[in-house]
Image (cartoon, helix red, strand yellow):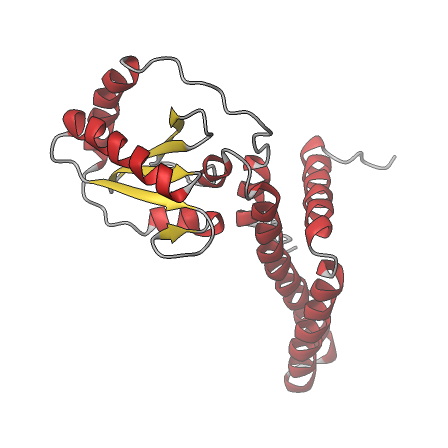
Length: 237
C-alpha cells in the first residue's frame, strides 16, 4: 500500500502554493523568472561538473543548484509582494515587524489617533524603538509626545523613534523596517530587557482605551514572515 503524505508535508505544500498565488497577484512574471534562474544556474553548474568529473555528477549537482537558485529568487520576490499587499493599510508597520524573531517584543498601536496615526513599540537590545505610521507631520508630533512619556519610565535606556512611509528624508519604507530595527546598536543586556518590559507595563496601565482604527487591518504578518524566510530548500537525500 502506498504511504499517505504526512500532514506536515501537505501543510508545507499548501503554504508554498499560497505564497506563489499571493506573489503571482503582484508579480505576473515570477514563474518565468524562477524557471529562467533554474535553467541558467542548473545548466551552468551541471555542464561544469559534467565536463570536469562525470555526466552523472553534472546531473546530481546541476538540478539542486538550479532549484536552490530558483528558491532564493522566489523568496525575494515573494517578500516584496507580501509587503506590497499590506503597504498603505493602517497597521502595515506592525505586520512588517511580525518577522522579528526571539529577543524582540513588539507592542502594536500603543498610541492611536482618530486620524489613524499610530505608534508601535519595539523593545529589544537597542532599548525602546517607537515607530510611527500615518501622516508624517502629524505622526512626528505623536512620536514626540510618546517619547516624553516613555522617558519617564525607562530612565537612561535609549529611545529611538522612526517614521514609516514612502521613501524620503527620515522615513523608513515598510519593507525595510524590520532590517532597520535589527541593525540598531545593542545598548542593553538581555536581562535588562525583562526589567524594561516590566516598567513599561506601568505606563501601559495608565493609558485610556485606544480607539480602533477604521478600515482594513493587514492580515499578512504570517505571509510576511514566510516570505522573508522563503521556501525551504529540499533536503539532500
